[in-house]
Every structure is written in C-alpha cells, then in structure tokens.
Length: 196
Image (cartoon, rainbow, N blue to C red):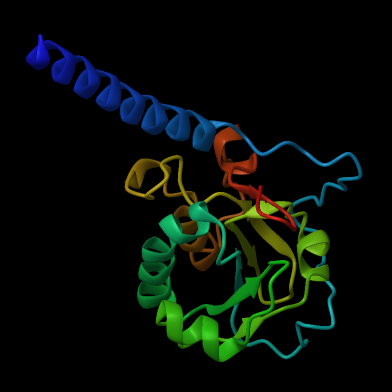
C-alpha cells in the first residue's frame, strides 16, 4: 500500500511538472495581443527619433529588449551571434524597455555586450514595436527595412525561420523584394511596458 501511495504521488508530481512545461510552451507560442492604440509602421517608413543621429555610414539594427522578459533572455545568445557575424557591417544597438531602472554598464556587463545601449521608449512606437524581443533593421537612410521576430522558435534554433538574419542578409545584398510570413511580422513575447 505504501509503494502504491508513493507511486501515485510521483505520477501526480511529474504530471504537474509536465503540465507546467506544456502550458508555458503554449503561452510562448501565442502572439502578443495588439494594443488598442497601436499604430502600424509600414516598411520603407522614415524613422526619425532623437536617439538616432543622422550620420550613419552603416545600417542600424535595433534590438528591443527587456531584461525581465524570459523571451528576451532566451533570445540573447542568438542576438549576440548576429552581432558577431554582422557587427562590422551593421550598427547594432540594444533598446532597453523596462519599468525597472538599469544603466548601460549593468546591461553590458550582465549580458556581455560591447554595443551602445539606449533607453528611449519613444523608439518602440516610432518603429511599431509593442513587445520584446523584437528586431528592427533600418537602412543607411533610416528607412524601416524589417520589424519583426528573430525566429519561430523560442531558442532561435531554426535556420529556415531565422527572420532577423534573413533580413540582415537581404539588406546587405540590397534585396528590395523580401517577403516575410505572418510568423515573422506578428509580435511574440512580453508586452510593453510591464513584461506580461
């Protein structure tokens, strides 16, 4: 009888753990709800913002990031691989969007980044970003080339859907006819500004 009771409790415990993993995986696959006051920004739009100066010799990649967002943390290794691969041809910047206060040094040290860190929340609305993590790629004239997801998988492991990398490669090859799926352009992750 005692073995049966222990077996029952172990089955119950592992079932609960399995349910939590399944539930979290389902939650991460759901798109972020679009805010009621959301204003869509079309590809090709000029992005004007005081945080971006006008003297750019390279395209700009903005990584919208919240240190409290699990999706942003899952994405960090992939983002750093993009910086390593394209950093000599693209101006990478991290835009921190969080209700908590951070310093540039804190973000750079915690995540091992040696790129500029911005804290201007107006960049999110200027680029049409309402969740983290999101990638925004601007050409040299600061026109929106891509705004969307990094990948369809949480850990950014699927090369076929490595949307941010596809956009970077397309911009550098001067491709103007790139078409992305709904999965690339619909936001997935933590809502702004409170990481829900």
